[in-house]
Length: 475
Ligand SMILES: Cc1cc2nc3c(=O)[nH]c(=O)nc-3n(C[C@H](O)[C@H](O)[C@H](O)COP(=O)(O)OP(=O)(O)OC[C@H]3O[C@@H](n4cnc5c(N)ncnc54)[C@H](O)[C@@H]3O)c2cc1C
Image (tube, rainbow, N blue to C red; front, side):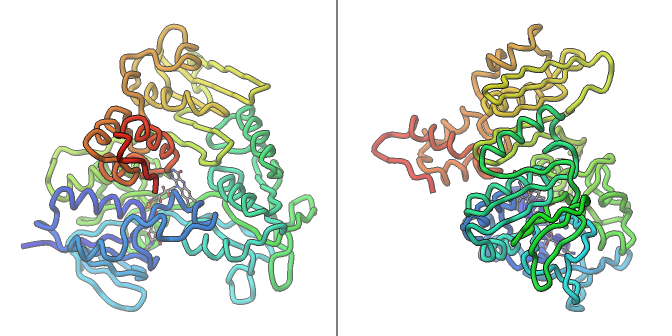
């Protein structure tokens, strides 16, 4: 008899898990139901900047409403799960309904961290008009509707998300100031010199940066009019975006007796200590690590789909190597692994081209790449990501990998899509098989469906490879 599989959350992890389940013909084993607090189908959260820039939800939709019915999946849109009864194997939703399940998966993601700020909220507890988060399509649509050219914005947080929001608002014609508490931008991914190079690049875009500055409050009676810094200074702001980090959404799991530390604690099978309950994505904590980017989540979904369907009973998730890239046009930043050496024997190689705004740093342990930071040089990123992934011994002259590209045999097939690890050869093969548009190549290879930053390179390959008569369409 088929079992009932309930997926709690309908974000990027749930979407990928559904793809992996469908690929394994999971409908033979399960009646699948997805509960999504957001009313939209699953969309590509990574590309929210496009919605902020004036695009629509449809532009970034991964699974329109029809997909669920067509795939035999029941989609409870706009339905929040409030409780899970592990022993009774049923869950309860905010509207009081109960749903029995056999297997449940938490895929509840993260919520933006909102620091305590005086005056942020109105009397009913909602944020004042003009204050926004940057997490959902609805956040971006509301922010876009509120933003006015020639008015001012403050973005709290100078990390990956904050800088992306700042650029999108600046592109809308706003005067933007980034307020960042640490001493340098992107301090999670870069050391101080790297952060200073990013600052220069961001300032060249016309965005103002205040580092080492904490926001303590918001001024304005009816709506946001400014942001108060600890020094007492008020930075004028008609619009205020909070992008100061995220926290795993593990509150329903915790209230239901599922062990939670920072996130929902899972083992190598993505299983929690409660029988029949699993977790994936940003809400899950594996070996003490909570991931905040999608490549590890894709790996988790693959393993969980194998485990649930029995397609590969030996599948285990052993943790992921993390690679991040800033998606702000004009500011190339990539970072992977360690930012700083940890042991005396770790080697550090830094190459600084001050005039060109290029900063490169490698951390090498036992002859292998364990960390890399790049600012202003997008080209070396793919090469370094391969060295980092493979963990093979670097050439004795470390500068060979930094400045002259990959000298290994694998360089013959450079990676184009770092999110899905798709090499040039696979893309060219797909084009030769008749995929002559970007959506076709993406559907066949997944290239371009992650952060989207490789779409230009894929389009170039189509132009170079596709028979001329077919033309190239990039939409
Ligand atoms: C603006 C932005 C840009 C980003 N850029 C990148 C990038 O370039 N590269 C990268 O790798 N990552 C990026 N990320 C991070 C990436 O989006 C996340 O890692 C990914 O979305 C996590 O997937 P998830 O499914 O775990 O969580 P989410 O995508 O957040 O989905 C969780 C879903 O569960 C729902 N939910 C929560 N609780 C419940 C409940 N109790 N009942 C029902 N539903 C519930 C939520 O409403 C949400 O829809 C970015 C994120 C943002 C916000």
